[in-house]
Length: 251
Ligand code: SAM
Image (cartoon, rainbow, N blue to C red):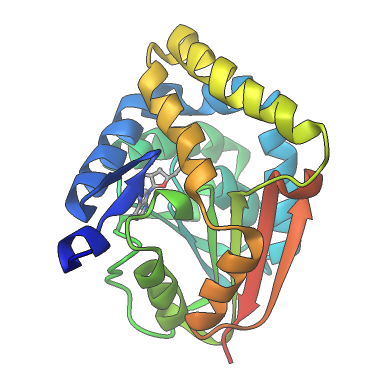
C-alpha cells in the first residue's frame, strides 16, 4: 500500500481522500441543517434528548466555567450547559448548522441565559483558540464526522487548561444480544427512508448510519483519547454501547 492509499479516510462505507471527506461531510450538514433537529427526534424517538441530558450531567458544568462545545451544531448541548451557568463557546465547521443554532438561541433568549453563548466557526482539527483556554471540552455526535480524529483530539488537549475535562458523546457498537440485529435493520433500512420523507434526503442519512459502523470500538477510541495525552479515561456505555460517553482529564 503506498502513502496515498494509507491517507484515505472513511466516508460512510467508502474510502476517500481527506479533502473529499471534509467536503462531503460539509455538504451533508449544509443539506440537513434546517431539518436536523426534527430528524433527531424522528430517528431516535426523542431518545437523543435523554442521552444529551445524561451527557451534560456527566460534564457537571459549573457557573462561570469556560466550556468549548465542539461540533456543537444547532446548540443542543450548549443550551443545556449554558442553562447551568457555564460560559459556553459553540464551535462548528458548518455555518448553516451554527445559523440554525443562533436562531434557536434567539428564540430562547427571552427565557434567559442563551444570549451569553459565543458562536464560532472552527474546524476541530485546527482551532484558533489559545492553548489552555477552557475548563471543559465537549463533543456530541461530532467526532465521527471529523476527518482527522487524532488531530481533533490533540487540539482538544491543547486548548484545555491543566485539570480540564474532555467529554465525548458518540454512537458506538451495542453489545446487547438481539438488539444489535434489530438496530442494524432499523438503521440501514428505515433511517434513510425517514430521512427521505422528512428531510427529502436519503443519502445524507445513509452516510450518518454508515459512519457509525466505521467508527472505532469503545476500547479503540478510549486508546485514541489516551494517545492524545488524556489520563483517567473512562467509557460509559448507554444501551449496551449503542451510544457511549468517553471522558478523560488533562493533567
Ligand atoms: N453536537 C450537535 C448535536 O449533538 O446535536 C451536532 C451534532 S451533528 C451530528 C455533527 C456536527 O459535526 C455537524 O454540525 C458538523 O458540521 C460538525 N462537524 C463535522 N466535522 C467537523 C469539524 N472538522 N470541525 C467542527 N465541526 C465538525
